[in-house]
Length: 273
Image (cartoon, rainbow, N blue to C red; front, top):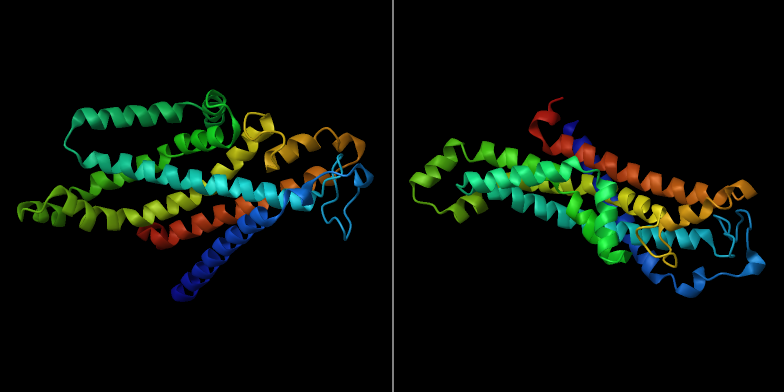
């Protein structure tokens, strides 16, 4: 039964990666001319020709949503990968025999976790001139703290194990212990942490763009689409916010549940629950 569940999880993981790849490729392949406006087709309700309808400028919301979701997912993927690497490096730095360094790491983690992510992302993005660069740096710089704390706790536990002490007495170097003892144990935490960071990064990208501190207005990002739709919901254009927002929520929930199930399978304590 466990093998069947694990095979199902592996199948879902592969399917989610395929979905991520397909959406990103579709977003890159959709030409700019396909999402250009035409006032003759403005404010059209969902139909076979325009499944998500059109906005006030006559742009096809289905194609814009796919292109915006592709941008959000690429930003989320890059930010979660960078954040996971930062968390791994910070957590592994605990191995170094320096109380001052460990105290500085704990102080930096507590400092970043004491400030709301959205506020910090807005400040970083605004200071870097907004746009894709500022948003990516802001998300990557604020989402590593929780995973770094988990990796640090795991490293503190692993370095006191008997096999690590035996390796030290046999004359093995710190880099050898890191490669053969610590990193194999930390790999599952890195994978699960990166998967769980991904939906949070997407949501923060959409929320910051929605507030006007992320992507520029001409960029078809999900946050910008939802921000623009607020002006026309009262005029009866309910589809302009419903379908892009619903697709964003479904993608976020999919990867969030995937990360939770992956964590339960890779964590020996959770796997017994």
